[in-house]
Length: 101
Figure 1 (cartoon, rainbow, N blue to C red):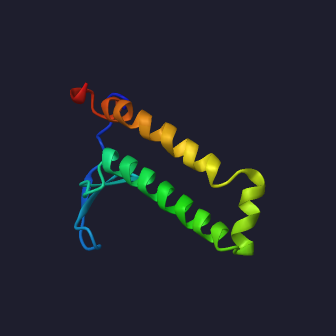
Figure 2: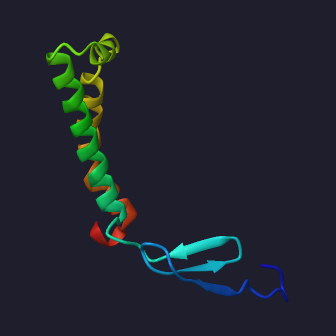
């Protein structure tokens, strides 16, 4: 910030479905909810697994729309990517919060 320039004023924002926030200049900030970075990372892994299972179930049932992904190796490729992601999760948590390391 240039010398002599005042920081932007904070404007309290009310309403919304998660409580209030604060606008500072062009940025809006709010408290985090139950979606910490670690929880988002875990949820991504859960969702990837669930999606892969739905695709595999559709393929087993002969669903034509689900058979097309098999031509490009899905859901096997995503299952492998999810497994690799799961192995990286502990390191991602430490990088997000060095106190955990």
